[in-house]
Every structure is written in structure tokens, then in C-alpha cells.
Amino acid sequence: MKKLLIIGLAFALLSGCASTKDEETKSAEELYKEGYQYMLKTSWDRAAESFEKVEIEHPYSRWAVKAKLMSAYAHYKDKSYDDAVMSLDRFIKYHPGNQDAPYAYYLKGLCYYDQISPADKDQSNTAKAQDAFQQLILLYPQTPYAIDASHKMNLILDHLAGQEMEIGRYYLKNKNYLSALNRFNTVVKEYPNTPQVEEALYRTVELYVVLGMKNEAQTSLQSMQANYPQSNWTKKAEKVLQ
Image (cartoon, rainbow, N blue to C red; front, side):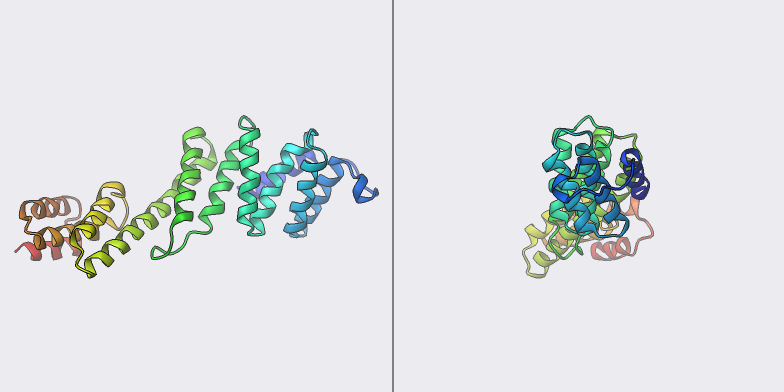
């Protein structure tokens, strides 16, 4: 999908022969072509530099708008995610009605999505990816980018739930039962469709029993029996209440 878009952006604007002028006298078109040639060679940093010169030296040309997006893509491919996000934020701010705005939101989400860490690590990039994709889905729900973002949200939610579980287990290990219970309940309420929820429900049964809250424990168990009747976590919860 990304490759097709980039090719489309490039050929929509590429025309004429290569420039023979010195760099300081290059037109917007020539700088844009130069950036595209660097992209073909996977010289992503130099491509980004050329596209950014279009913005700086020819800000009112018809090439400048596309150059913003192309520089962002080049930074993304170079794994210069902060620079890519800066370019994308400029594009979104100044060209919200542009036909490529959905892709800008999508690429911004990818910049964070590609940096998602394991669940036991910091999840700030996960949350930022979620925010970018949610904006895309809200503003442009029928686009292919929104559809793909929806699929990626599954992994995002699983990681966020996983972090809550890690913190909950830590509290449980240190016998901070109420804090642990709050974390596990957060998973149950906010991430009900993730694989983490089965263990989270079991942990609530376990903690309610420890805290002497048998009715609440029974309610959690009933939820497990209704939704996950064959789960090993459900069988463990039943033994806890026996």
C-alpha cells in the first residue's frame, strides 16, 4: 500500500529531463526529482534533505505540498521517526483537506507503531500510535488506511493491556492487593477483547478471595464461566472458590 502511494505521488509530479543547474539555482521541480532519485537509491537521508529544500526554498510552489509528505516518508524509511512526525504534523496542520491527509495520519501512526516495545517496557509509543490511528479512523473511516489501522489496533490494545498486567503482577507479588486489583480490573473493563482478559479475570477472583470479598469473586468467576468456559484460567478460578 505504502509503495503504491509513494510511486503515485512521485509520478504525478515527475516530468521533464534531469537538471544540469548548480544546487543553489535548482528549481522546486528539480529538487523534487533529485529527492526521488535518492529514494530510488534508498539514500533516505539525502532524499529527505532534497524534499525539505523544496519546502524551504520554494514554499509556494505546487511541489512543496507533496515534498512535505515525501520528506516524511524518507525520514520514516531512514528510521528518523521524530523528524518524520515533525514533517507529518506540518502537513496535517497546513493541509488538512488534502487528498493525502489520511496517509499522513497513517504514516504518523506507523512511526510510533514501529517503535512499540514489549509489554514489560515503556508503552508511550504504543499510546501515541493508538492516538494517531484513532484520529485516522475517526476522520477517514472508509479509507484503506483506516481499515489497516483498525487491524493494527489489536496489537496496540494487547500491548497496553499487557503493561497493565505487568504492573498488576508486580503489585500482587509485593502484596499491594488493592493496587493490583485496580490494574486487573482496568484490563477487564478497558481491554475486554484482548488475550490478557482471561488471566485478569482470574486474578480478580484470586484477589477478591484474599480480601474476603466472596460475592465479587463469584461474580468474576461467573463472567469467566460464561465467556471462557474451556479456559485453564477458569478452571483455576473454580478451584480457588471451592
